[in-house]
Image (cartoon, rainbow, N blue to C red; front, side, top):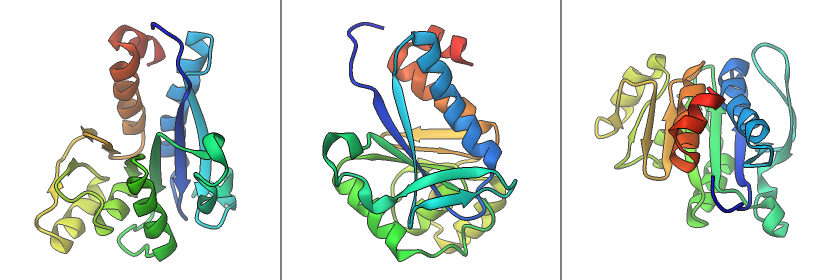
Length: 193
């Protein structure tokens, strides 16, 4: 794996009614990669618009920092990639503070991702324009009606430049293993998987 570099900082932005399996399937490969490498390759952190405990639809959840702190406290609070994690009906989710924060992340060259319905939030916010992406199958039709120009693909995951999206559930694991393979090789990603 070559020269030791700083850990890649991955933020997970939780929205109400996210599915715990989708989030866990994204976080666990990062933890496994750290364990197998014997050092911290990835540093995960959890955010929400307001901060505090955010329960999943299964009841369990995560304590989150407010999204407004990203980048406010020097190097320790910057991110390389931020994933919006959403469930329920993200076509109805409307939070202008989240959209402002996501646009701020883009200006700071933070890559964006959507897990399950998270891609629908990114697309509705104009942050997937001109990018190929996927989303949970239940949201494909409504998104295509919302904007027929969107480049929606029926796939488990899609990586298009600095945008990474997946259909949710265990597709999150496949996407994260693809990202790990990109950075650390396919043999290492297979071990993680």
